[in-house]
Amino acid sequence: MIYAVLSLAVLGALFGIVLGVANKKFAVEVDSRVEAVTKVLPGANCGNCGFPGCSGYAEAIVAGTVSLDACTPGREEVYHKIAAIMGVAVGAAKERKVVQLLCKGGRENAAFLYKYEGVQDCHVAAAMFKGPKVCSYGCLGLGSCVQACPFGGIQMGADQLPVIDYELCSGCGVCVNSCPQHVLKLVEVSHLVHVRCSNKEKGKQAKEACAVACIKCKLCEKNCPEGAISVVADAEGSIAVIDYTKCTNCGICVEKCPTRVIEKMLPLTTSFVQNKDFTAGQPPTGCQHCGLCQ
Amino acid sequence: MREMLFIIIGAVLINNIILAQFLGVCPFLGVSKKLSSAIGMGVAVTFVLTLASLITWLVQICILNRLHIEYLQTIAFILVIASLVQFVEMVMRKKTPDLYQSLGVYLPLITTNCAVLGVAIINIQKSYTFMQTFANSLGNALGFTLALVLFAGIRERLEEADVPQSLKGMPIALITAALMSIAFLGFSGLL
Image 1 (cartoon, one colour):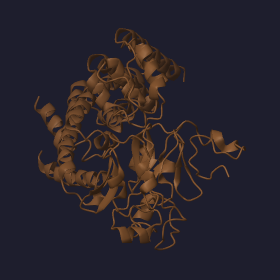
Image 2: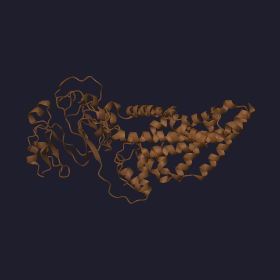
Image 3: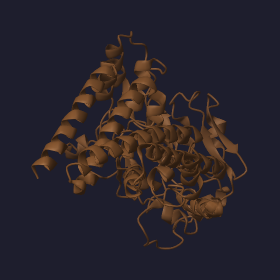
Image 4: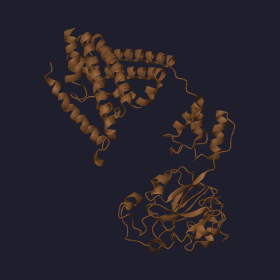
């Protein structure tokens, strides 16, 4: 018994000493800046920077192989902090992007093929005759993007369309990849005019499928003074598309569109979560009329 | 010398540690996606396994047998292997950071790799001498490396191959491993 205890203790102590010496001898210097940068990053591991996680990006920053403003969720704030840690002068950061929903076919507007009572996941619904709506291009409204958003920036609105909190939205694009219908798109925050439809069918079919559908009348194309909006055709069909590099947010197309598919938002300043308690009767700036507060 | 050669060949081909004795299957499936990391893992295991077997043999003969505390074999061996893996990890992190990165979690997993403990115990069970222990553990480690590298090569080609959707990834890997195991049965009449 005493031998057993002693021999194991001696063996353990021996190996402990060897490891201790080795630890000193083979110590690896870890750059303290890696830890500092990792701490500053949001830690959502969204992968938008092109690295598997925030720590991977932090290592690349310290190694000096990437630009410092690749973290879209962090916005300028994080960029400035990283620049301070790395001792680099702050340049103009890229304009932040937010996600836009290109569909207005909620429960009220869209026509339905059948009543879906399956798993509450857009991917599953999309596999059943391209979803329960007549329009096979539109939002399915089951909230895969709500689930996917690492920042809690998407909620399901009263009309079964996702409502995006542009304050919380970091532009990481995780929801864009989670949407089987591809109705979410990342757009710079200063662009306010959007075509809220993705239906590429001919005008008549599109109109039958949804009350708010692009019917390819080309009124927007004819009236746009900048030539920024046009009905673009591809193999599937055609749809009005805005060239955001040319659009000046003038809103003429919004007035001309007969189905009110084109929408001009108010400048994005506030969060719908913060605005829930407004009482004055006047919706505040940034209101998307989602109806969540009512 | 002849006998040592037989032990090595027997360990590499006939009683291959993975494909005939089914030890160390975790790293076999885990680190076989890329040929380069498979080779790295093979080298790491070869080093750890050979060294661990020799030290455990010494521990068994000089301490456990002499003090009649053979029942402490498992814990004493694990102690040796765990310390050795820690040591190898430190050295690799310093000397070859790239290899350290690519092996990732599997390097510490050598600690609980049954192949290492298995070979150490087999050496004692067969009452090998010190040199025979060396030959047997080196042979087993080479056999491990051989199987791992062959498997990684096959899996790299499988990535490109048109595999049915339901079999993609791990299922086809397991089937491949089983076929390799059957193929290695052919060596059983070699010696």
